[in-house]
Length: 260
Image (cartoon, rainbow, N blue to C red; front, side, top):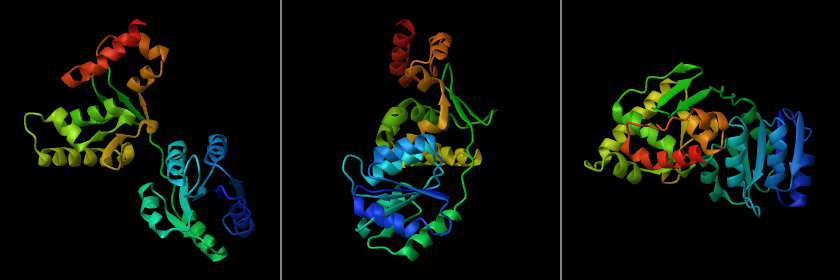
């Protein structure tokens, strides 16, 4: 496996390299003293396992882990820390394990063995259209979204993108006339079930109190237009999620982009 280790302390980097580079499962080992350098490497080199120190300046290990997962969802994350209380945070970003300092050769070997048997998640091609209406495609086939509010909730997630959506925000937008948590949770459950059946359960992710569309995993006309994609701008006919009144504010922004 191709392994990287990121730590801002020189002695920790050297110790890890001397301890791990000859272990079984390690085909290559590269060490980095900053998250920025690690991300630059991952951008053009395959990485199977990333060992990350948590307490680092500028970009800590938790934030680096999130960015690595955006770059490649199949990277196995293992945190290296002197503080056991970070373990829960580690699993909050889909880490498969953590090493407590001081560690030894056997500790690293166990984590590598675990990483070796974690299977890659096959990537599905996800396409979402919002102009003029919501449509979801997985590997080229359209997915039947189903229930009206279920579809509208997905549309709202897509509209909010990386800004995210809290439970209260969703309820105020979609159920202002019937403010009930049970309705929200029922609709959310139906939406998750539909995504699971389509094999894209990770389309919506949770961070803290908010849920987000995993924008890096989809090809979406909205996101492409916001980034200035000329073909999408040219084909935009002034209609965006046209059946939802709350989408009008976004449509005004798209109209401005079209008319620039």
